[in-house]
Image (cartoon, rainbow, N blue to C red; front, top):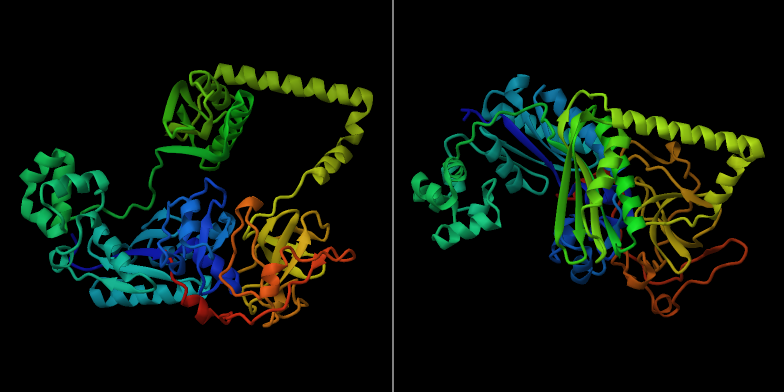
Length: 536
C-alpha cells in the first residue's frame, strides 16, 4: 500500500454508446443501446439515458427492447472505438511508462513511475488535466479514480461516474469501504456473495469483522485470505505494463440454430481462420486448440486437442477444430460456436502435418489455375467476381456509416421491407434530416467513419448537405429483421407519418421524403454537449 494516491484508474463513460452519441447529433441526450441487434443479440453498452429504463450491459437485446422500446439500437463500430481508444491510451502513456490496459476503455496508470505525482494534490491535478485532455482529443468523457492501491482506484472511478474524479486518501480506506456491499470487492460474484449472505455477511465492514479464519472456512484458503485482505483495503498488486494473454479465441452466436452438419463445419473452419488471424496479429502461437459448442438447450460443451508444439498454421488449427467437431453431436441444433488457442508462445515449431496440408492446398490451387487458363476462365474471373458481388444483397445494419452520391455522409437508422432509412448528419452538425431509399440504390454505398472532433464542413465531403429541417418528422426505424420493428430514436412523429406506413418511393430519385410533423428537440453539436454525455 502506498502512502500517496498515485495509482490512477480511468474508465471511459459508457464508451461505445457515448461514441455513437458524439458521432450522431440526433442521438445526444437520448437512450442508445449498442450491441447485437438480432433476436439473440446481447447489449454491449447502454447510455445512461437507457439505463434509467433498466437496460444494462450483458442483457439480452430482446429484453432491452421490452424495457426501452424507443431507444436507438445500433450495431457496434469497433474500428471507431479502437481509434478513440488509441488516442486515450496515448494520453495515458504521456503520464507514465506503466500503463495497464484492461479493455478498450479502461486502464490503470502508475503516476509515481512517471514522476508526475507524489502526493494527493499533484495526483488530483494530473487527474483533472487528464479528463480535460480526453474531452479535447476525443470529445468523450471519462471518470478517474485515484488511490494508493489498484482495487481502491477502481472503486474510486466507479464512485466518480459519470464524468468525475474521486480521490481516496490513504488511511481512509476502511471508513470508505465499510458500508459498501460485499459485491464491491473484486472476485466476489453471485456464488460468493450468497455464501457470505448465508453466514450473515452483507457489507465490507462485516466481512472484515468476520476475520480471516471464518472467511477461509467459508470460502477456502486462497479465496478467503484474499477477500479478508481486500476488506481491510489491502492490495499490493503493481501496475503491469504488459499483461500476458493466456488464450486467443473467437466465437459467434447464430440468429437461428444450425442443424445442417455441413454448415456447422463450415462455420468452424471460418472461426478457425479468424482465430489464427488474431493469433498472428498478436505475434503469438499456441499448442492447444479448443472448440466450444453451445447447443439449442444452452448446454455448453468444450473439447481440446494439444499439438506437438506451438503453431500459428491455419491448416493445423482448422484440422484440429474439425477433429474436435467430430466428437460432438450437433443434430439437436447449435446456438453458438467458438474456436480458441491456448498454451500461447512467441515461437512456432514445424509441424509435418501442417506442411503436408499446406503443400496439398497449394497443389490443388495450381491445378485449378491451370484448368482455368486452359478454357479461358482466368481472363473472365475478375468480371465474374464483380457480377457476383453486385448480385449479393447489401445488408444495412443500424448505426453503420454510409455515403450517398447526392446527400453525402450519413448513418443507417434502420432497414427492412426492401428499404433503408438514412439520417444525414455529421458529428459537428445539427441533427440531420432523414431520407429513405431502396436497399439496392446504386447511389448509396458504405462509408468511412468521420472524426468525432477536429472535423467540420471544410474537411468533409458533406459540405453541401442541406441543413436539418426542424419541422420534419422522423420515420420509425424498421429493425433488422423487419418483423421486429422498433423505433431507432424516441422522437415524436405526426399522425400522418404514423398512419401512412412506408413512405412513398419516388420513381426518379429512388428516395422518399419523410412527412412533415411536429418539431423535435435536439442538442447543439458542440464539444460542451458531448462532454455532458455519460455512459460507462
